[in-house]
Amino acid sequence: MFIAIQHEITDPEQFWQKASGALTHPPSGMRVHSTMLSQHEGLCQCMWEAESIDSVREFLEPELGDSSVNTYYQIDPDLAIGY
Picture 1 (tube, rainbow, N blue to C red):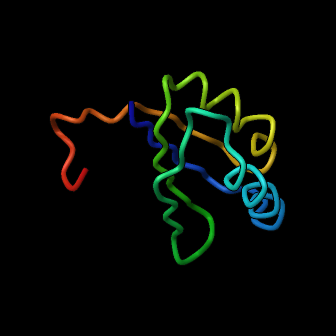
Picture 2: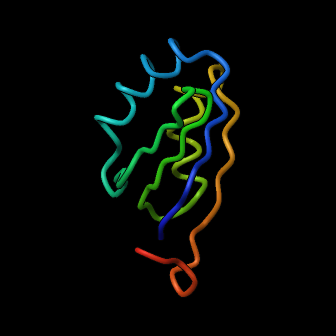
């Protein structure tokens, strides 16, 4: 399944330091497809592929939880454009 995450970044320096480590070594069966950053560094959206939203949340929250507010949602492949 594909999972999108919106990160409302509260501490940009800490977020990118932690994200650069977490994104480069995901667990087996989990893959980040894209990371899109707003011009003002306060908002980032990522697209992951994994077995469940919970698996991505359990992986990312310990790394990013205190530097951003994260919203997770499953992508509907029948309604997605450009997927």
